[in-house]
Image 1 (spheres, helix red, strand yellow):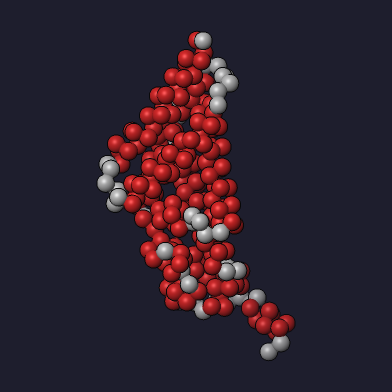
Image 2 (cartoon, helix red, strand yellow):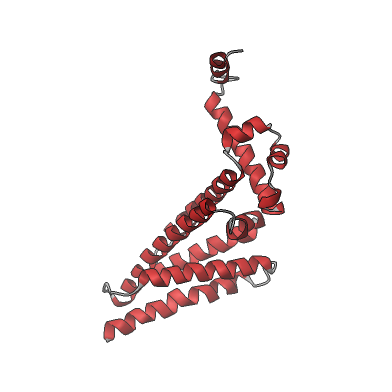
Amino acid sequence: MSNNESIVKDSRNYAGVSAQQRAQERKDKLMSAALEIVGTQGFKNATVRTICKESGLTQRYYYEAFENAEDMLIQLYNHELKRLYSHIQTVINNEKKTEEKLRAGLRAYLETLYNDPRIARVILSEVLGVSEKVDLAYQTHTNRFVTFLTVLYKQLVFDSVKKNLNLPYEMFARGSVGAVVFIARNWVMTGYEEDLDKLVDDISFLPTKVIKHSGKLRFFL
């Protein structure tokens, strides 16, 4: 069969399902398999063979979806962070007060890690120290959360003093993201020993109390 004939055959509809839909279905299976393997056995054990066996697909379809193992990990990481970020956005949009938005977003983040330890392992541990490209993906998502939190911190202070103040919001946000990730990683590694409600209370103390009142202090100086 010639290459042109192969392309025509692959682009045909089968049982009303287009070639694009079939490719997406295969990609979804591979992503689910990658999450299972990386999230339970680690990136080093996520070989082409193990992921293909888990997904029930051949190596041909693996390389249709991923360039290599590094690309697989980046795509998996991006996929899970996109889902997590979307979930957090949905949750905080249901809250009116900024303090409650912060708490709700934090709870949504921690609950995701608690409900699916595979996701926790992928986004907190397995992406670290793999390669420069994976590090770049990690930093990109970290910066996204920093930007997101910076906006909330500005609103938190404004709600408190009814005035926009020149505070180091981004520095607060970057420090907070780093602290939350560190605490979350330790929480996961210790088998979720800390009570979720207490953890949310303890972590949210900094933005809802310290930063809020630092705004009031700066306002009166």
